[in-house]
Every structure is written in C-alpha cells, then in structure tokens.
Amino acid sequence: MLIGSSRILKKELIFIFLILTLLIISCEKKRQDAEVIATVNDAHILLKDFQKDVSAYSRHNPSFKITPDALEEYLKSMIDKKLMIQKAVEMGLSEDERFVETIKTFWEQTLIRELIDAKTKEWADRLFAAEDEIKKEYERMQYAPTIKIVRVKEKDKALIAAEKMKKGEMVDNEMVIGPLLSEDVKTDALYNVFEMDTGDSGVFQDKEGYIAIYVVKKDKVLTAPLKDIYSQIKSNIINRKRQKKMEEWLDEARKSSKIQINTQLLNRIANE
Image 1 (cartoon, rainbow, N blue to C red):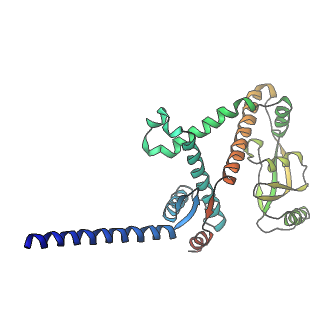
Image 2 (cartoon, rainbow, N blue to C red):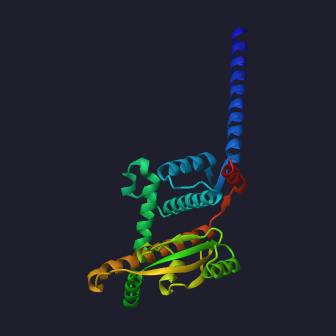
Image 3 (cartoon, rainbow, N blue to C red):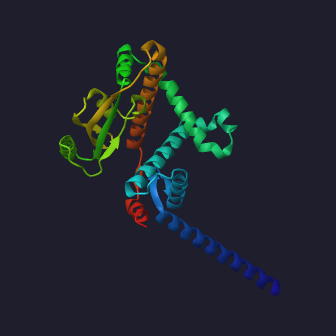
C-alpha cells in the first residue's frame, strides 16, 4: 500500500514539475517577445542584443553619438546583416566545406564574406570601367571641394536650405565637409559637387531623401599623370560599382522580406 502511494506521489510531482516548466517557458517567451526590437523574416533581433552591440560599438568609436537617428541607422545595419546571413544560408554557403572548417566564433562574418564573394563573382562579367569614366574620374581627382551640406526628407525643404546657404544664411543641421577627395565619396549624389563651381548650390536625391549642397571653395590638387594611376582609377571605379550593386541587391532583399521594427521600443531606449 505504501509502495502504491509512493508511486502516485512521484507521478504527481513529475506532473507538477512539467506544468511549472511549461509555465516558465511560456513566461520567458512572452518576455522575449515583448523585448523584440525588430523581426526579419520571422528571425528576431532582441533588445538585449541590440543594446550590447550599440554599447560595444560606442566604446570602440568614441565619436559615435547615441541619438534616435543614430540608433535607427545602427538597427538598419543589424537588419542588413541578418538579411545577408539568411540569404547566404539559402544559397547553401553555410554547408560549403571551407565554411564548415572555419572557426565557429566567426560564423556570421564568414557567411557574409562568402556571400559578398559569391555575388562579386556573379557580377564580375558585367562590371567594367569605360575610358570616358576613367577620364572623368581623373578630372574629379584634380579638385578638392569644401562644401556645406544639409540632409532632409522633403525636396522643398532641401531647395529652401540650398537657397539660404547660397545667400550666406545659417541652416539647421548644416555640416561643413572638406576638402573632399573623389576617392572619399561614397554616394552618387555627392559626386555632383565636382561638377559645380565655387558659390554654386544644388539639391540632389539620395536613398535617404535629399541633400542640399553649397560649394564653399574648390582647391586644386596636385595629381600624378593619368598613365601612372590609370590602373588605380579603373580599380576604384569597378569597386564603387560593385558596392552600388550590393546596395541595390540589399534593397531588393529588404523589399521581398518581412521586416518589422518596434519603433515604440526603439524610441523608449533612445530617451532613457
């Protein structure tokens, strides 16, 4: 009789333990769901991981200012990283023999690098530098403009900012950049400054909105003969086209993916 009671008690204890375990798991899942700052194709980016990454980046980059805009940009970079990893896995790169032998600690970095290599090979036959492009780039290299720049979302505000800068008036969020070398330029919109003269202003569209530009001055740069730097210029043009191609590919990946950002949570931590 005692043995039977003992067995019943043991079963009851196991049942209670299972119930408690399920409750704990359920509570933990709810807590994590509440702390999800973004979702990329059902893959979560947790708040704690986002904060840890931002904190580490801030420590290694003292000039990094934690503002709502900066946090939003950093989150976008994490989303892009997550997207690239997912695409690399879809392409089977995670099963590549070379990858399997790679140190586990660098799993994500390796996948992204393999993805970039794979896409570079895919585009290799379509990326080239024409003679006119090389000559045009050489002309740009002979000047280093100093500019005032304002980034805004709306075109009409950009036009107003450009006109004010041309008149010598101060504009909110105005930045002075330069002397600017052509090899330092990363966006197509900024390339326009090399075609502008001192005192010119203009408005150009980029992927984040519009930029208003005013050319403060253009310094002449001592440049080596074209024949001596021809190969370097050609390589720079192809690398720039490769980067643009990757950005376009990422844009398409974003559009075809389900991405959710918890803006309320992002704003909350930005104000803490």
